[in-house]
Amino acid sequence: MAWTAPRTWVTGEIVTAAQLNEQIRDNLNMVIQKDGSVAFTADQPMGSFSLTGLAAGAAAGESVRFEQLAEISIELAPTRVLATNYQNSTKLRIVSCYCTCTCSAAHGELQLTAYTKVSSPADQDIQQDRQENSANGGTLQARVLFFVPPNYYYRITEVHSNTGAVSIGRWLEWDIH
Image (cartoon, rainbow, N blue to C red):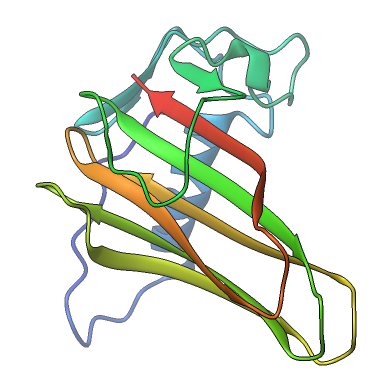
C-alpha cells in the first residue's frame, strides 16, 4: 500500500466508500502503521510533509512510541513567570500550564489566559480557562494548552478574586524540530 496524495473534494461531489478508504484509512495506516502491513521507515512520506527521525515499533501493529520521537524536545521545568513575555525560537512550540489557588471565601475565581503575537507584547488572546467555586474554601485549578508559531511571542496571565496567591502547578514546553 502506498501513500496517495490528498484529494481536493468538490462541493456536491458524491464520495464513495472506496475513495474514503483510500484517502483516510489507507493513508493513516501508511503513516501510523496500526495494521502492521506497512514497514515504517525513517522518513515517512506524507505528501509535501514528512516525519523524520522516527524508528520502527518493536512489533507489528505497534504505533511509534513517545521516546522514539527524536525530533521533539521537552522542557519539563522551565523557569517561567506568569504575565511575562517570552519569545519562541525557530521551532513550533506547544505550551501547557496549569495554576492553582486556594479560595479564601465563597465565589472564588481563577482565570488563565494565553496570548501569542508575532511582535511583543503578546496580546492576541488565544485561549482562556476560568474556574470558580461557589462554596467557602477549596482549591481552584485552571489550565491552558496552546501552540506558539516560530519566532512568536507568548505569555500567560492570571486573574483571581477571593483567593490566595496563584502558583504555577506545572509549566511544560515541547519544541517540534
